[in-house]
Amino acid sequence: MSETVQDKVDFLVIANRLPVDRKVDDDGSVSWKSSPGGLVTALEPVMQRKGGAWIGWHGAPDEVVKPFHHDGYDIHPVPLSAQEVEEYYEGFSNATLWPLYHDCIVEPVFHREWWDAFQKVNKRFAEQAAEQAAEGATVWVQDYQLNLVPKYLREMRPDLRIGFFLHIPFPPIELYSRLPWREELVEGLLGADLIGFQTPGAAANFQRLARHRPGVTAARGRAHTPDGRTVVIRDFPISIDSRGFHELATSEKVKAEAAKLREDLGHPGTIIFGVDRLDYTKGLRQRIRAVGELFKEGKLDPHEVVFLQLATPSRERVEEYKILRDDINLLVGQINSKVGSIANRALVYRNESVPREVLAAMYQMADLMLVTPVRDGMNLVAKEYIACRSNDDSALVLSEFAGAARELKQAYMVNPYDIDGMKATIMKALTDSPKIKARKMRSMRRQVFDKTIDVWADNFLTELEGQ
Ligand code: GDG
Image (cartoon, rainbow, N blue to C red; front, side, top):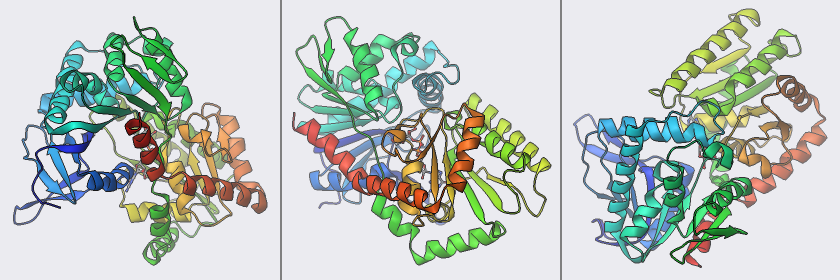
């Protein structure tokens, strides 16, 4: 395959961020490294097969970066000014849509300037795609930051097949209706041929909303638009590269890392683990409170049990995230000052991001995994734990408000708002017989190894291209 950027391509992915990170070497030379997430792993082979391109922001405000070829496909960086990052990304995407789509856990902020920037940037992404797409190409738009792209792109290039996948939940109509620009956003999505959601519930919420548009009829997963098009509305639960994670977690290097980590934690009999972006949707406050109380009440012994919570820094310039960071620091301090000792902390809290190998080691060594979001589109952490942890004497405590709860039915389910209920379930998960736990783990493993990220991508693209 040629190393130069192609004029037109048959397959395009549009996402807020590119799948690569810039690396500046000591001599000042610039190179790009794949940022290996599940999405990139799933889509790379498809793009290579079809000769595709990825359109997205490169991460540096006020900088224009030329298109380049990377690992078998083209990269088209979309420039954003510092003000656009503030208004389109931190503002409208992460302080308006993110809380609104997560059931208004925190109050969404509505600013007209943010909305203007959101439209402008979405148009820029659409224009870039319209330029790069060959006649009849397939374009796959990712996530809420690009909610308006399907409509803009359809107007520019009616010949394209346009798919949209929403990685986060879609709220009920009563909450969605608060949005001053609700009509425009629904229209935005209806520009697609296929709109994918994480769960049937999210798809149903959108279908109900679409039905309210003048001239639109929508039923049984299909919306018919006034311009005579049919839009398919369906759930496609996302997954992970299960085998990749499993191989990594069972490699000698990662096993050694796990042994070292366990030693660093003072060789506890039981390790409870949680890992999340530091986000108010992830239920960290409730989870830490529940485990803290179990320690304080003596139901968990800090000489025996350690709770390791990793919270990856996220969206640190958005106000609500600053508040959350301070709250969690305080809560952790309060718990550790009452239980355990300096040498023997009950709660080990790390507000940092770790390399993939270290994360795999943590999954591998965790006897009990806590995944307790108050709202989550899917939650990949739950699936990653199941793929990585090879010991059958293990348990996953999972929030019923995570999309993953629909598939990982054998998990110990909790309502994260019910602190007492969560405490009781954690104790049950720790004390159930090895036989019960093994049965649950095996059943969840079957699910996670059966329904992988490739299956997700194949299902979506087959539906989109087969129409
Ligand atoms: C959105 C939706 C949906 C976390 N800390 C580290 C690290 N991670 C990785 C995990 C996992 C990913 O980040 C987090 O994925 P989640 O699915 O849990 O959550 P969101 O970031 O909110 O993702 C969500 C997802 O999109 C996909 O559609 O499931 O519902 O909200 O992969 O492993 N990775 C490394 N170090 C860390 O410290 N290397």
